[in-house]
Image 1: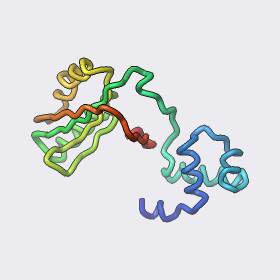
Image 2: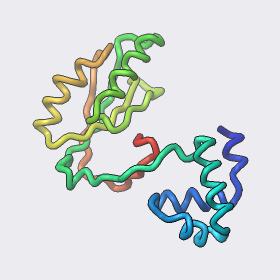
Image 3: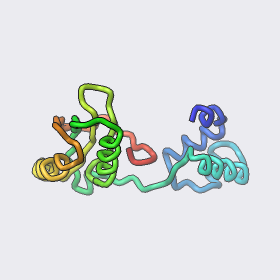
Image 4: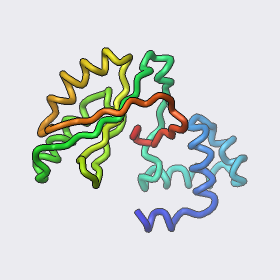
Length: 158
């Protein structure tokens, strides 16, 4: 990945910056904004996609308008941290839509999950029925977010 980063020039980084703000921009407008003609802009965009620098495009949804106001961060401790247990936990977490993000952590716990639900009752049910049933979960601690001061969507949704 370091080689990919060093291979990006100012036009590539400009393309990425513009697309991060407006993924639906036309090639013509993108070319105009970065100061290149349409053909080289298109070629650069295709190369960035083929090299995996741009991994996809998607609509960003407003979770509040979808009724998903409740955000909780959950510390998870596993009872087994051997590779097979970690793989099993990771695979199970990947299938749960309420878990927006899951990070393996170097700390006194093993994972930090960002969970989004409708409300506290829905979260309580989700906690008891889903999180506690994930493979190798020994214990959890929940932190409820009161307000999102800054949120940045990553390209893969994490």
